[in-house]
Figure 1 (spheres, rainbow, N blue to C red):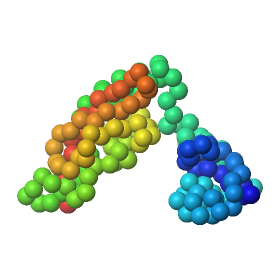
Figure 2 (cartoon, rainbow, N blue to C red):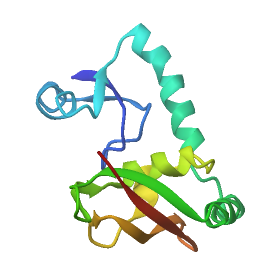
Figure 3 (cartoon, rainbow, N blue to C red):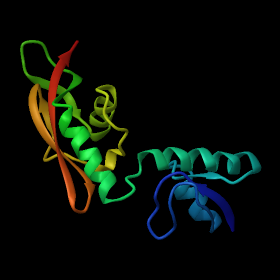
Figure 4 (cartoon, rainbow, N blue to C red):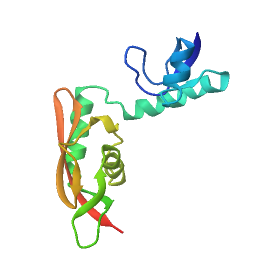
Length: 152
């Protein structure tokens, strides 16, 4: 049995910062190569507190906190997201990801969110104005307006 520390949520095993014991092959062949876990050691166990603090900063505590975040998000207006685009065309090289959106929200003075709360219908592959949804709580959804701008 291998003792490991989880860095992300793993179904039927635990969440970030949990110290769990799994079979050697599962840890060696699946969890460690994908970055879902790190080997347990005294130094790594000290890092558990850092992992949990980072997770706590992004976590939405309750319904009132979710409503507060919704008003902050909707008060930001259009959030500028820079993406590489071809010249003379409005098409992007790639697409805008939820991680890009979370970074743009933070840069615009908004709250720090987990990228998993951002829901994009389809892919954002063009320059211009787009709308996405932030699912902050089962009862609270915020509409976020994006302004995708080209960069060279």
